[in-house]
Amino acid sequence: LESLCLGDSATAVGLLLGGALTEYLSWRWCLYVNLFFAIPAAIIALGLFKNVASAAEANLDIPGTILGCGGLLLVVFGFSKAESAGWGAPVTLALLGGAAVMLVLFYLWLRRAAHPLLPLRIVEDRNRGGSFLTILIAGLGIFGVFLFLTYFMQQNLSFSPIQSGLAFLPMVVCIVAASLTAQTKILPRTGPRPLVVSGMILAALGMTYLAQLNPSSTYLPSVLPALLLLGTGFGSIFATAINTATLGVIPEDAGVASALVNTSQQVGGAAGTALLSSLAATATASFLVGEAATPTLAAEAAIHGYTVAFWASAAIFVSGAIFGRVLLRGGPNLTRADSAT
Image (spheres, helix red, strand yellow):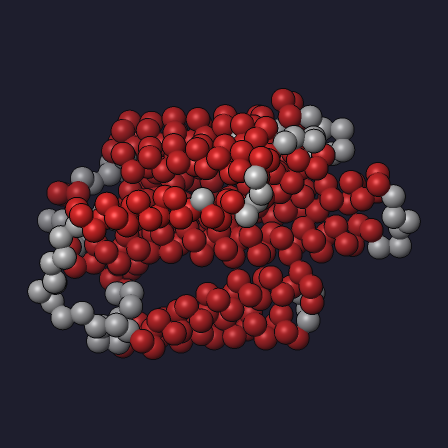
């Protein structure tokens, strides 16, 4: 719970800091600034962590690493290539087809490997497997709001980078409130299914609300209500899914399960950015076909691309609600001590 609150606080700070750096220095400082956090953290870690070797022999699953990482790389690259080459282009189809083949081979390898990169017992548990999948799906859809809504606020509402960061704060507040409520009050009584499903539905409604944006839209009536819905949905999804994804894991699998939580988020974010950017760019280009270029038409085309991305994000969250309903269990949630027995 503490790590979730820290993560939500870091999100708020990151939005404001990124806006300030972009406005007063350069967007490149959003990359440089990480050094000021990473280097002190590394120095502190050297002084606090004790290097104790594991009693078990460590084995690196080279084939599994190549197949898993290669398949995910091809997914993201394929989505990105669709923006420039088109969804039906041979290179796009080859990349996505190659990704499917590699990921199938990855799964088959995990079933027979003596020391697999990802022990399948971790994801074959219904609640844990469903949680990892919902984290991945939420990661796919969440960049629809961060990426394209930032574009809309800066290009169409003429917000500065700092104003854009401040505009997201109501969503962050809702994420914190929903996370705390879900973890402490609701999850122990209902289990993960109701929280994840309702969170996905709220996120889908928020994206649907944003899909109604037009050139005359303003922040308070057209954006803020969606941010409140999205924040409440995201808090319910991530707090619940992260808790459930690591619940009851045996000590030997704790590191892998925790790493898979982060991997699911990062892969979802990378693939979602590539997918939604490709869809938005394609929609914008199609809107301008055969039309005389004017500033007004260009603005309308850009918003059309954003709304297509918002609709796609809404569909992603609807699929997350369906998978959450099918895979996750309802009923009172087990404690960590109960689940380990």
